Length: 125
Image (cartoon, rainbow, N blue to C red; front, side, top):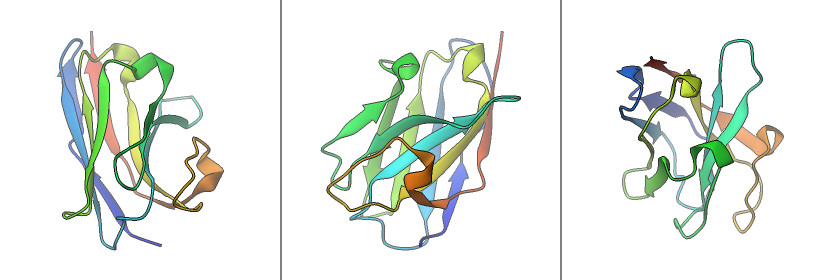
């Protein structure tokens, strides 16, 4: 397992942008990396994933075209660029490392084996 630390959350007005970062303590170059989020009173949901080499990405439908996930394996860091933010994007955002084989991807929280503590992104009207 790796240790994950998120940063970049904050308060922004609707229509604005935030860039989240996830720094890993260990080697994540062969692991699919994911972002999840949990809004107040709601269950944690998948947001985006990027495969080990960046060749495959997947997004929650409601963020497609607004969010972009990327990774820098040399820096062991994963990013989530969030543009055109909406109030409904307000949530704690979690970085997660996949625990399934490198050639597979999954949107399921149960397939993750390492989680960060989260960073809060708040979008005001």
